[in-house]
Image 1: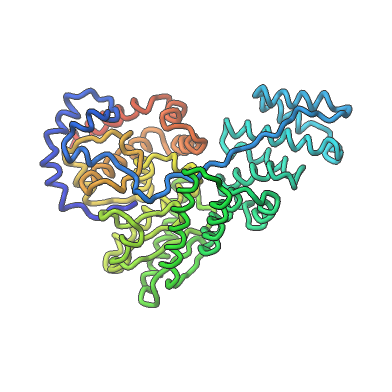
Image 2: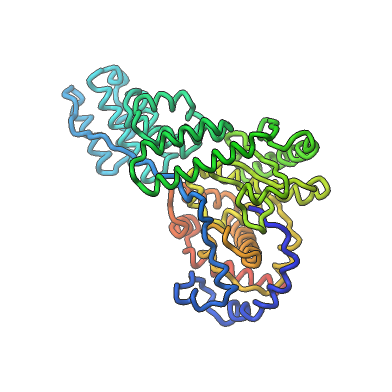
Length: 476
């Protein structure tokens, strides 16, 4: 999300909060912890605004797909029975490298044995599930694909493979593949949810909403899943109505929607900025989106109402629909502003494409901080705020959604996110940050991922960053 100019609030905010920073940076211990409920209750009204709350109608996370083991106890009675049983035992003991090696070294002729072939599929399936526990879906795709090749009509195996494809944004997740899975598992909600996701990305919103309805009809009475599906379905149908009147233009990497011929010039400029961002930021980050990104240009007076964004936002990336959304009224008169907003939101789209479903595990401060740094976003008002003495919000309090923040608190949040991300990039480099993101993609907590990748705790990172920030302020 990109927040609009905040210059008019910088000096009042600094004046109100200036004394507090003296305590934070000089007298209080450097280690930062989230405020306890009692502490939060006793803070001033400004401080209470700093704890972000998610928007009430925003879905938090897609319902998880439960991976399914297949009972491997009935080993086929062949001359390879002992070998197959040994592979099974290696999988169950967690000796995954040994199990995979033994499976690969089996005679190729076994795959044609109608008695052994289904059992080999079971072993590859169960191996994939254990690999995913350790490495995430990136580590399990190969095993699930092998299992599916051996048993192409086994719905359990294909469901596991589909989930791995879905999380990895794998191009092998096609409508043909999902239609075949729906035919094999007609009562499962997940194939319809995955189909809806694929159709959304292709801008076939009406069909996507129909599949979301079918998923809801098969999802049982789980309140979390039903709530998610209702919210997403309503959002998809509302978006379809809103964007139905818009024109659409495609390039190799983007689909840009705009309102009629009057915005044709804006569309041309937007596409030029986006293609430049695609090349520059993709190269800097070492990753390019796997599919075209939809960019919607809204009239300025309708942007907030249509997107549900906070009043201080000048643009946003919607991870549910996979869209960059930007108000464009007057954009051509301030091309520098338009460039900053589009590049910032492109980074969010890039991170979403890379992280897949695990984007929900990416803390907002890291997401926003990387967007500022990778986009080369030189916000003049943010630079002004950086020179002020403002209180420190613990990074752990900035991990959730920021939609409920006041303008003042949002300004401080962006300042901290930018500063912490810059410190991380300068201290560890982009390769190490990519590895950190990989760990988060495997659903590791930020605390565990930092400890593993940087050999220091989350709390230690915050302490060192604050010390660095304090030294920068001392140097002016």
